[in-house]
Structure formats: structure tokens, C-alpha cells
Amino acid sequence: MDDQEIIHALEERGGSWNSLFLVGDPPAISCWTPKGDLYGLVIENDILYRDCIEFLKRRGARRFESPDEAMRAFGARSNLNK
Image (tube, rainbow, N blue to C red; front, side, top):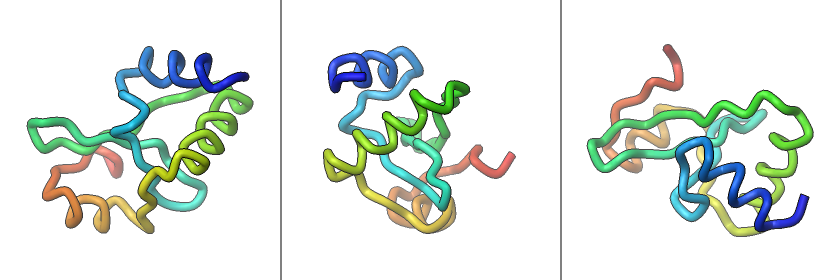
């Protein structure tokens, strides 16, 4: 997939690519909302998931070891562990 296709796929799932970050290993593609909620994007296609992860890494997305670390950084509530 090219970058425009990846951006479109991420935005279809509710995340502006430049506000997404990675949590954990293997990484979850995550986002925080203006309401202070932290959520993970669901990508069921393994190839698309891999391409999105690589795209976000190339673009310098922030990375966190755990949802707790991300929550501390953003002061957010999480649904990643639900």
C-alpha cells in the first residue's frame, strides 16, 4: 500500500494519522480524544496492520511501553485494557 492508502485506511477507522501513536509490543495503534479518552484502532487485516505500523514508525509516531505510560503522558482514561 502507498502512504495515501494507509492514511485513508487509518482515517476510516477514526484516527487522524498525525495524532496516532503506538502502545506495547506488538504495538497497538492508539489515539487519544479531546475528551481525554485513550482508545485503540481495530485493524483486522494483518497486511494492512503491518503497513500501518511501519507507516507510523517512519513518520515518527510516539511509542509507549504500556497503556499506563501513554495515559500518564496524555492524562487520559484508557479502554485499551477492557
